[in-house]
Length: 313
Image 1: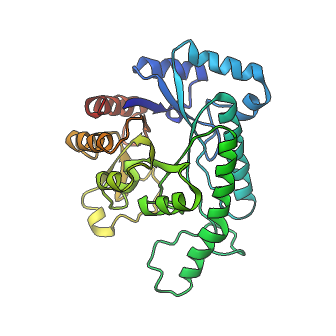
Image 2: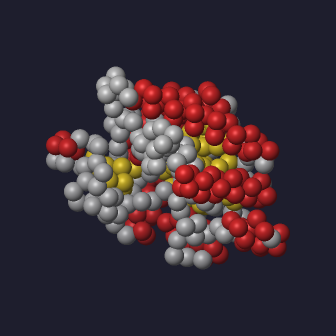
């Protein structure tokens, strides 16, 4: 396995300065956002698509530092109703086109989330048992069979046309694909170009065991995010893990994203990577630093030290 970095955490730096900073950490692989929710601080997708010279200069900055793009990220909600879904659908296809022109073989996305029916104007995430109220089975059927599967089949076809080999979906709360079972459902319906971006932090905060998930997902793990979470003592025991407070409310939330090693200890991370390797994954682990309890630099240094001490190389 090889350590990479999700570069949005260094959004305040220019593209060349960001690459220099990443290289100073001893990291040569980058995951950069090219669409979706992110402002895409280091990838001007429209300009790169429009100009061979722009693309040549972009590649030259990477090459002179002996660095490479491990994935382009385009996490948004292309399945949302109306203009929002259209916006993120366009962004997703633009990212595919750019990946094709840059020779990037893997893109990281989220599945998206439809409305609950054709007349809905906002996405609807069903997390309760569908046995009651009785309207929910119809919602699930609509979201999967009328919206998600047709959209992803069309997108997967275009991905193959662009030379993209892997679409790594990040299982995330508030998305139709939010755990291993829903990922495998979409993979079964669309094809083996669909796999998971295994971010253990999201499974942790839903009460799942990422190490057990690795075993279920064997053969379908395309990408891994190095990201930790901490269940906050004295808070989760009272209100549980379902928490819609903003992530900035770190003091009162029942869980928080934290630097690697500040949630699970290093022994846990060693086992996680060992089981990943045993299950056949030997690819990139992209550090995604979203700890709001410390400075960016402290979070990066803490996480890099922890990952370097635990990765199965």
